[in-house]
Image 1 (cartoon, rainbow, N blue to C red):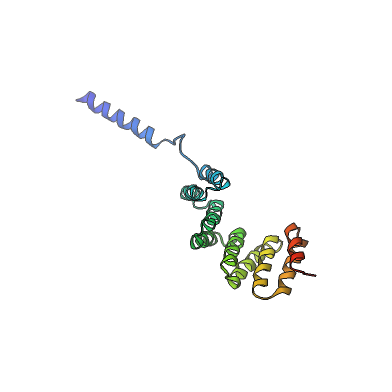
Image 2: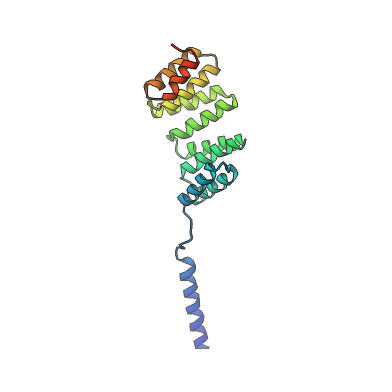
Length: 175
């Protein structure tokens, strides 16, 4: 009996060691994120969403995974899910400029231009040199009938180095 008890304790200790030690097979949030990027780049957006979700599950502060999952959701027409992911990032990090730009762009696509402008304004308040925020705010302004304001934003974006803004200015007949 004494031998059996010692053997049981030994087996239990070995089991604890083996099951509680970090596994070489354990995936990190970044591992899942990279796999999600591979799926995304192959236009396998639903699979990308699954991997980005695993990345978020492994580290809820992996904001790149939240942003990319939101973008992927938009591509598969889950627009509410897309907005929800961007909003989650903003709730966790109110100064995350790309969450505002992404959410504003999603709102532009939904025709929610005034609300989109709020997001672009917040992004610009965080970083007044963020050319993408000006570019996208220009589209919201144009959609709201403020062509002059749109042109001003696109000029500002161009001055900050956005090459796309040059084309937008030309296509919209801005001065």
